[in-house]
Length: 188
Image (cartoon, rainbow, N blue to C red; front, side, top):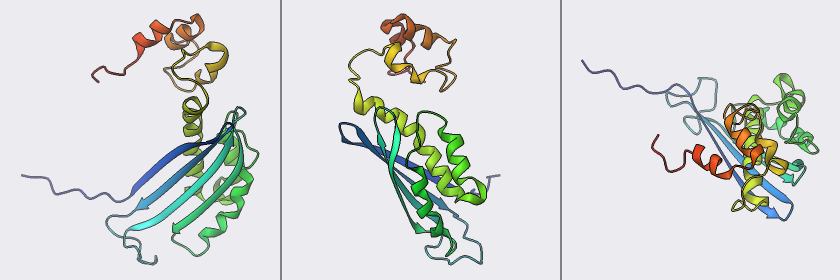
């Protein structure tokens, strides 16, 4: 007996891209799309047929302090006429540091009834993208990492925990040890 074809109820896609726009700034853009492949609720405008959210957010971030200096958003598709009211408050992102306390600060400014849950999810998805892009944009990645400059990685995930082997190799300046732990080029 074959299983019936499964059609998802809800699909969310988030894509983020970062660009170096000056010697001290990045632009990071996020795009969130929510689709309902089996159809939208009856009380929604059915155009386009399955997309209920299509939103973009761009932030400009200053390096090296990772402070947001500009924020703007748009909604191509949204379920209610009230939804775009959540766009002007995005200006409250200006002045926030992506380096320290970002998730908490975003929740305080936009969480629950203070903002749009979908834009909040998109904002929070951009924080790690900023952190990843900074290394590519503002340091020579051909040079080995150093504990005095690259310690921001510490405690960002279990692999980079402060008591772990990656951190120990970073502190020791053991580039060969870091390479030995790299999964690049190895089968999964």
